[in-house]
Length: 413
Image (cartoon, rainbow, N blue to C red):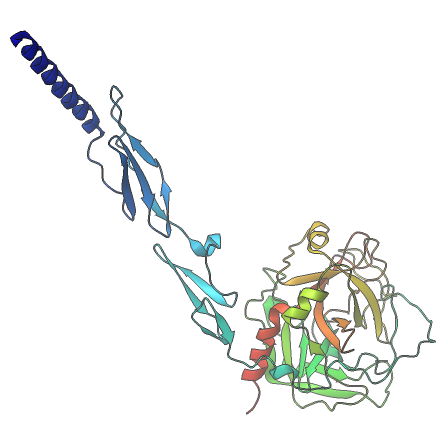
């Protein structure tokens, strides 16, 4: 009996000794500290897991395991690295806000002209401010359907007086580009592209060198319906983020006229497309119209026009299908950003705007209201009339609030 008790005590002693040895081996993991900006979780007695706080990501080992008979775990510790939510676009800032990265967090600040908490930004301007004119986008002079004379714009046809009453012919004295287009959006405001309002060293042309002609059809002869204006001092407003030397994005500008145009059968404003309408009409295969006084013969990229290639004397227009983002990006060697641009045309590109058509409006008619809407402004192309190339336009829906805010802040109360 005594032998049995002695054996039992011996077994108990051995079990205790073995457990102590296990604990000694387990303790060889060393001191387990949680990483800075992170946490340490005990899964089992010999297994631990690391995680990071919100706004950080784990770099290095994710778990630490200590098992009997194994070598001591490496002393290398994981670390929690700050996530740049702004750069990785893992943030909830409004599209009208700037994201500012912080340590483990980010801030959203509404851009000038907007108000809110940064996650929701609303315009400080009434979005209907620009469209209060009930006559926008209405054409009262209907074209003659019997007209059949066709000519290349490239591939377009002549327009009749009053057919596109929002067209603005812009001429510049002493500029590198002397003729281009714009569109009347309010009686005292013309919308065009920024790239044609610059001279050398990215400097703006002078306001006094610009003449804006409204109601123009045949620019080589008077038609008694034209209205001409100068641009007000300080009346050239270019998008703040546009840089001709760096990018094709944000190619948009406003011209504030010295006076207000009189709305007639030959001069009228056009409606600006809103986001809801843009989602419907900017899809591929919708047909849109572009008009201008540009060169009427194809030109290859990098080859200047010959002396016989003149700007059209009479306003012309063409109808083109809107191309989808895939084609727009695939068939150009330049940068294309679907957020800021549209493109239009066909693979053979038999119809296309050309030199002199810069700033020409890309428009579409609403089938219900019959009003014409401005989708884009012709910005650039790789040559014109070249196969497998498209024409690219500044996307108006993206800049709708910018336009409204600039006009609102620069209009006399």
